[in-house]
Image (cartoon, rainbow, N blue to C red):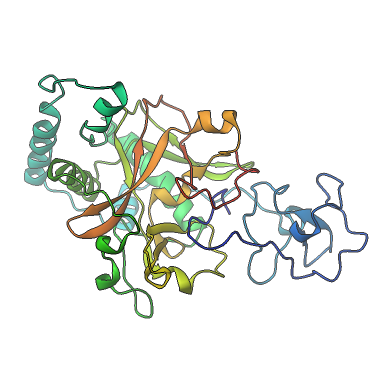
Length: 347
């Protein structure tokens, strides 16, 4: 499991071990403390105790079913996906066309060609920045490097048992597409401009054609799977859309999924929606959260999570909130304006 939080409007989770009655004399093998017994988890094989927040990567909730400590599970580095072009292209269902690629390039030049020179600055720097247009990501020029980037994501998705998807999906017994109504958002939802919708659609088409975002998914023993910038990324660049199965929050309040994301925060709680990328998802599933309780944690935040009304449908975008250097890991604040999830043990 990677270090990711459950982003939802559910009440703060209460950590309870399946061995709640066996705490007497139990100490955490990592920190040696018996404090915070409600966050102690016992291994189903050796019965040793571990705080959820002392594990690496941290567990954000008690896993369903049996759980084994690092020593008993003998966790190893995930097996890399084969670096074979046909396998990677089939995995991501990429379809190439010279004519389509040329049109794609022309469309990107049209969007980027507008630039910012004609814009008149007015008011504060913050106000000026808010009015700037979103930018499409800039793929790596080297096709072999793009294959490496795709392989890194395929490795992470395969290891987590997740099918690749770059769209919101609506499954039987979950929320219907008709339930995704931005008008239900508590306090209203900002509408993505026509120009920015074109940029988002361009990003989608580039991915479908193999023009991959410059991102590398790596495995870190401390954080689990995490994402790094594989080239310089400019401020306000669209990194990715947060996708997965759409469900009602009321169906997921007791779910231990570690990557749920708020999609619709409705005035009526029964209408609130979340994105669940545990079965289907993309690179957003592996972008990690930061400790928003400290200045050091906040300094690491280089992305912002924004929910938009896109042509009458709620969508979630991860966008660069400053220039990002090559090799820099991507982090954002899962709590956003809600401040409802305890992130004090995050990176």
